[in-house]
Image (cartoon, rainbow, N blue to C red; front, side, top):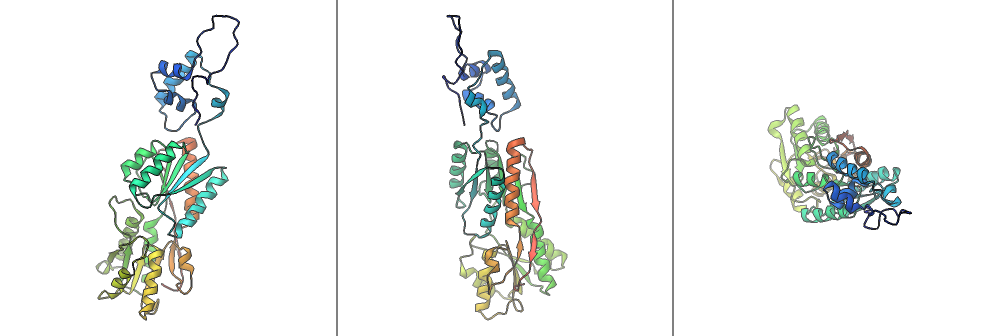
Length: 350
């Protein structure tokens, strides 16, 4: 971002030897009763400047006849670079999501820089602070672990769009998500159509907040079980791992008495190893044991897994998130919250 200094004003040629003092950005700041940084934000049309601040600064600019340098006039305070904050790349779904974000930004001639927060709030905060310091034009956060209050604080400093975070009343940031509740309902409905009644859900590790995709998928699961008259058979099993790398939890689920006839897995990265464990025990899939996953990731398409899965259309979610962020940068917003309809992709597992 450009900020004019003492020498940033124009050089005028005067015939009067008693030339008046040059008006600088510091002069404007003193006259308006604000900081130099505030004047710079107004002149560069930066994000987050209040109408009152803009009015005060522009009145001083006009009254003093301040003229910023040509370079400052030509810049809008934008870097054409946007941050993307992910947990990691172990979930194949995130590759589709990132591809969609890249496509949306590239279409507008923008760039993206990807950072990984590792599901650690301390790391997330340091990375977002760095994005602000680097004057990035905005950020897309995917499943951030930060609480809503801190997300709102950051969104007031930099245009922000969240994916994997449902908060439809938020005004300071936008959200773009697959309709997770509807997707879970579709999964249960498919298993009911196949004749299963003891349908369990394998859910993500729970966190406080209530804004996560797992919460919405769990709500959709319970709603579908109730609609099918199976509320008394509903059971949610919480996974101990977000990455599906704990074989013991799949063994424990299949050892349960009575064992479920089918499982709706909140993600493919849990559904795939669950099928593998079931087949290792000699269970026929889907005759003895059926699974429907979520994400329709590349894992689900592998043979012999062939996992039926809910496609949350990651590329479209990512592209729409990029477009929503660009709109917020250009025009501002009071909070847009977009849901992308999911699709059921049937394979042999359920």
